[in-house]
Image (cartoon, rainbow, N blue to C red; front, side):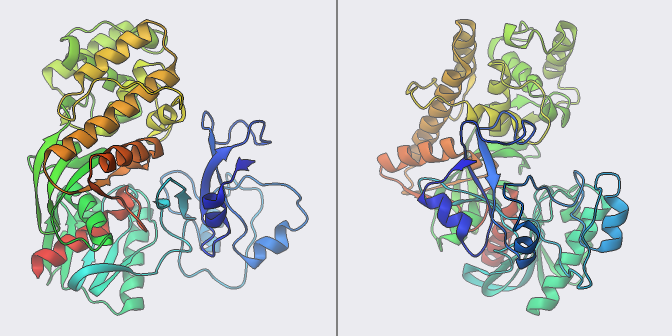
Length: 481
């Protein structure tokens, strides 16, 4: 089904038994509906004796999915599963031994460096992650998406299992039950509670409801940077290129393409991507063509023409309406998000105008990268508008999407390395959900190392919001101490 190198094979057969993302073989016998338009598949081996008993005589691979519907936690109690999953499951295997803690499968990806954790849960949790300084008994509540809480005491931090997106009551209850379970398991009674700055995050609201504790608010991208610094035991200063989808900045804007200089105890924002509007707010995340429109408003003017690559997907009247939103700012907050820049480029070259899942446009753009293309678009971390113009020119001239994707990735990697080197810092941190992109991660790392910088990237923890709580814990420990 997939091509396995030594790194993938070691991950696949390790005791943790994660899902390993590997390159799909040509002609692999897998339904077209499994990971459509992706060159990769997630594969895993049986991790339970029951799996071996059930599957010994099957003789071929099976398509698996978790016991939940979208945006809900997985079911682990029989009665709950029978009720919630009855509309989608024909049969249930139950057992007289109850499951005590829900745990999603972990997901990892091999890279040219350390393995890249995408989701840290079964097999890895609750193994502790060391802190580089002593922490009082504390709880870090994490972010809103890909939530995983963290408890810490002394030099030990216990990052909880993957909870998911805190968007409904069931998931929030799972979050609270997980915290209570870990507090009992590790005998931690928090005296300090760390949380994101976003006041509407349910994780933040939970933190602020707790009484008799010291509350520490931690900026989202500083937490990303701090998680990587702490994992490497780094107490000094560094420059961090922190790229993700969204996170509330200290100025109240939506950050996401940030250049920070700092340490565990504080940071300075020394650069960021050119700010553009997020037309329609959250809707722009589900409809990448809106970000293409927003970037074109910033690049060519208030009335950009509908690109031919989007003519079949977007009505001209709708395009003009969204352009007006960008100009007026109505329901369109300002963002510096690197994730949304990927969305814009994917839409402009005809890869994806609407998204069916988070990050789909960026995932498909990465998948199209032509390894034979060594060109790069002009870009600085401060201003990506020349990149947008170059993408438009290439698409208009008939360039293949793979060529556009390769030049965009290379341009962003070079610009990021140049921006980091210009700060004079000797150490660079790469983190945030955008750095789940292996092409961008490896190319940026190579350019930074060629410039003489030491590069830190997440090790045991994901670069996405699954590692945020550990970073919050490290910052809180530094500030309180």
